Figure 1 (cartoon, rainbow, N blue to C red):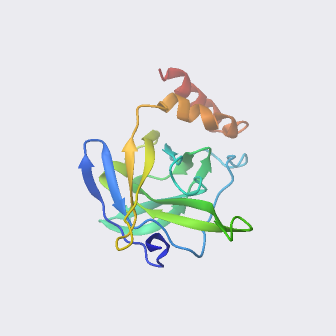
Figure 2: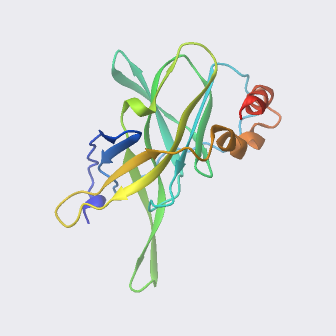
Figure 3: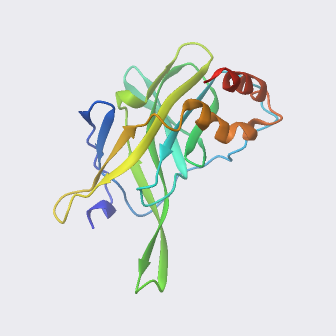
Length: 201
């Protein structure tokens, strides 16, 4: 099956307004570093908070990991794992700089032999440095990337599968942040994020 090729093919095209189309869906093997959904209570608050939401209803896996790419002078210089919970990806204490939500994925199930054998397969979806997912941090703050729906585009027998991430109005920024606000409890990020949440409509 084409989406199980070892190499990830990436095609980023603005197909229609508010829609981003990507190529190269997945591969088998490996995984990605993950962080606990809960903030580290002992750390000091610094830098910025970055978050967004991916609706993975039509994907093979749930959202298990998201990677934040850092860019300097147009070149990717660092890959940073983010926290994930119920479709929300987020990370605190992000230093100033240019970033992009570069990759996401998770483990899906595949059934063989009429369901008698179950394999847990990691899926990798590469965004790269697409403008719709870029975050430029010049001063400390709270940065929202948006809520997007994952849609799989079947490539057929002779073509790779593709996917598109379509910007959604719902859930709202307030609803997204509310999903993970309890994970900040007892940390230096709790008060500023609760204050920010209270100001959202």
